[in-house]
Image (cartoon, rainbow, N blue to C red; front, side, top):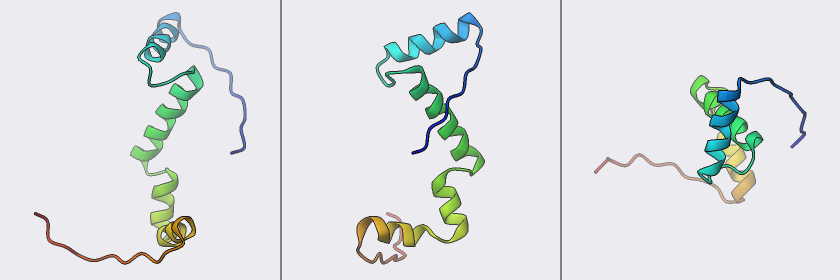
Length: 79
């Protein structure tokens, strides 16, 4: 992944909130927390990599590249 640096200014209360989130153990750096928020927003707005692949019709090709096995989709009734 190609990375770039972005510097932002936050109110002290927001910085303290982020530090508290790190203390919960799910994130180890402020950058991880911010990236997670951006990914969540991308999912909501339909701009995630998965959403883009689905819209472009390339999801099955991507799955086959990862797995190497053909994927067969079937309709099954819900239980």
